[in-house]
Length: 108
Image (tube, rainbow, N blue to C red; front, side, top):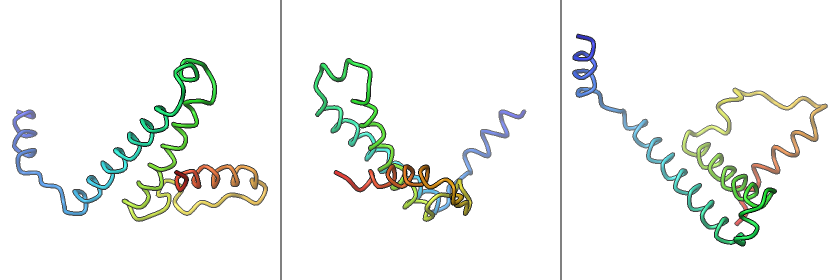
């Protein structure tokens, strides 16, 4: 009974143009992340790839920052999770690290 209802509702469900556009944009961001990771990892030597450390972390951090900025552009707001929250004055060092992370998105 319930399963039948779900099947019927699923067949008639259509995403709005806004949802479709945002979904497509986010998929492009995911491709940007994937491409960035592959490009970065391909430039790391095989020896460095097999060791623990910052070698691949830096690839992930840079690719993630690019995806974050891309996602923000798709949704149309800078950070929907913080809901207008600002860094307190005594958190200057944390704020600097946050913006340094975000600026990685603009590096090649």
